[in-house]
Image 1 (cartoon, rainbow, N blue to C red):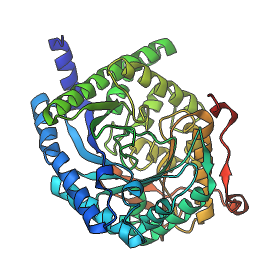
Image 2: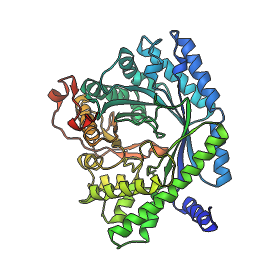
Image 3: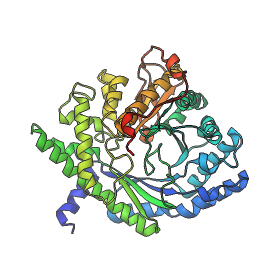
Image 4: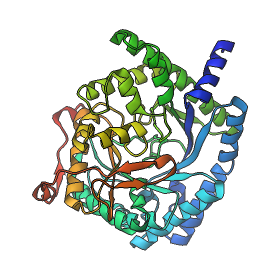
Length: 454
């Protein structure tokens, strides 16, 4: 039973500590939409998504009012479009037309993003996979709400370096296509190693082929709640610190579980998972970097940062996993630059570099996220950065990702304004030395020896 103290405590977290449910995401299987005729396929996609999600936004708003819990975003994820469109798409333009269909239905039902303009190429690329990937710049520059992701590697298969090389070029091309808007298209594009099938967060959400026809996944967020709790135990030892984070993560995740169950019941769609990631926003007091400072660092990036982040990530998972019947997605701590004011401050102070961020990704949920780099960065350099991050995920049997934004016309020292939840970012320097010969070798990096567990 929930007592009055817990109700008051939750209300306080919502009102004063930026607690929110970041997203309710409905995943939808589109394999029934496969057709050899492009127009028929597009109509099937539109109708399937519309029928499944027409009540999603209204349901989220009702739950938010009923329980007094902000639900910031309502989103959709779909089966990777390379699988759905493979039979009817013969050109880049064909695939981009499906992206426009996704955008149209997303606007019609009122969600802020739709994810799944995706390809899974960790071991090899089909013709459809490659066509979709090559269509990404056109698709993201001609739509508003479509998000794209590509899985380039896994612990079981290794890293597809041909796809890594291609994605370096595609990211740069997407930046060029959207240069009038500070290369914003790249903020809707992410590459993965070990991509989860049930991630509710954008830009990486897609509906995995192992999932049911429809599913409800919820992403919670509470960096401000964790920081406030830690303020009360300043100077205490690590045991007290860890217990405080665990207990707080439990409370935050219980809110997500409540919302997920209610949305599932109202929509008649099975409950999938709660993703208990700490997802920051540009709002003051809603920062993962500020939690690291509260743990005892002058800035995120100072010596001890990786250890502090490892502690935080582990305790969040230990506390959260007890609060929900199903935990999944990414679950842990996001460390984007542009979406976290504390991270921005650390970069501007010179405390946080791209290399230190890469080290931090070894122990947190995702990877190099929402990082602005100079627009004249070479495609092979971007591919090298991606390869490093894929290797971390592959060897450590974890999800890693890269969402990097080469901002055309900007250089180190400039600031990029994305607005809204995407915030703003200082353009960070990139190692100037070439990896071109490495990236151009082609082929696949084999899976590590510990992948062979049969």
